[in-house]
Image (cartoon, rainbow, N blue to C red; front, top):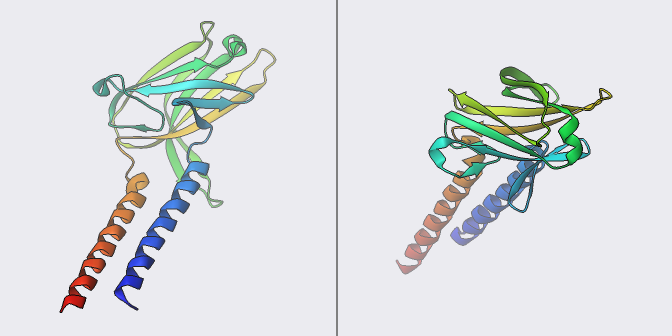
Length: 191
């Protein structure tokens, strides 16, 4: 196989791998979390919340999925519909559990919990100190006056997300390899 052919194979393989990875993670990783005009939106039953996470060390920078570091973290939820103001709402944070045989994830232990209550102003916040970096799941549950309840889950990481960066590292390595092969091929033709 010629060097230029190998170069093309490296670039095409890296591009396809990155594209497939991003489509799979976009479809599965966020749970009930979505985005609307640069705002995090958490779908719960027929309704939704606006959601933001903050850490004191990052100023006013907010996050949806990845808290940059361990330490104090505040979650803020704003109700998208007025009907949610009359419902009991609770919030808990789970450590991400082990993968199950069917490819899903079992619930890990609850590490923080905000008991159910009604928020007539349409907003609530919850502060927690994360001592360990890792993967977590936020769970919001609402219950109406008839006892019907809905749940929304959103995975997030604390202290970096090394596995989420892996495709970009691999793409960079493939690009460096392709560049090296290209230079080697050019130098080989001059000799």
